[in-house]
Amino acid sequence: MSVKSEIWVKGHLRACFATGLTGVVARRGAEEAGAIYVQVFKDHDLVVLHAPAPGPAYDETGARHWSYPLGEAPVSRAEAQDYLDRQVAFDPDIWILDIEDSVGDGLL
Image (cartoon, rainbow, N blue to C red; front, top):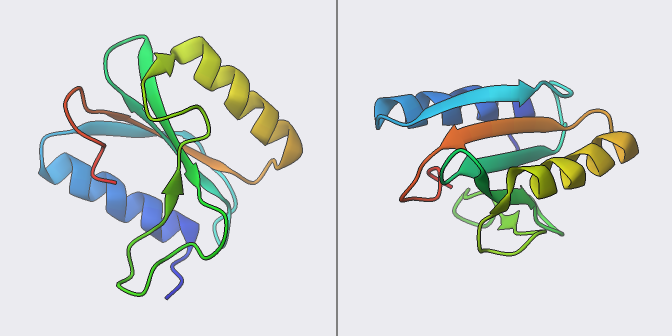
């Protein structure tokens, strides 16, 4: 199952809003198949960065695969931004989604 990036982003933000989380599209990418990166903010300066996992984007149940390019522990906002800046330089079609979720995983 493959869903256009723009549709997935809009749907995920709606799911977040429905549970009381806030989020924004920090960078709009290619509608059809831009890679999606999600920053889950634990507080103002700590972030867990989710990136596309290598291999298929979805598993057999339709769940999206994620990787943690900076590790599963929160890192500084500046460290995450440096990583994302390098990704944008490599692929200008990426999406960046920011979600505030101090206790969870941003519904990922």
